[in-house]
Image 1 (cartoon, rainbow, N blue to C red):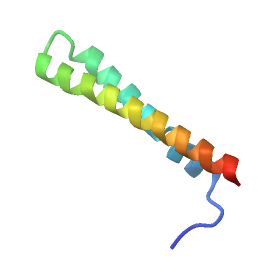
Image 2: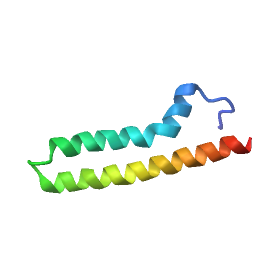
Image 3: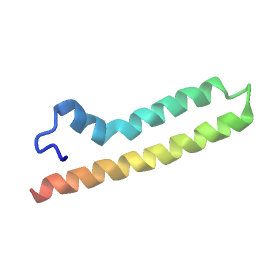
Amino acid sequence: MVNKNPSKSYKWHEKYGAFITALVCQYCLIINWEHNWLLAGFFGLGVLICVVIGFSDVKKINAANNRQ
């Protein structure tokens, strides 16, 4: 079932959720920097991927809003 009028928090989460995930990955990266290099690399890769996904989500949603 598709919600015709989603709430503001749902719209915000849909648009910026990947950036929040990137911030959490960055926090974990900082915590694990000197203790575990494997996890630091994993979270560093997570930051890069989530930021790219976040920018593509924002671009996609803004393009859809401009068409309406």
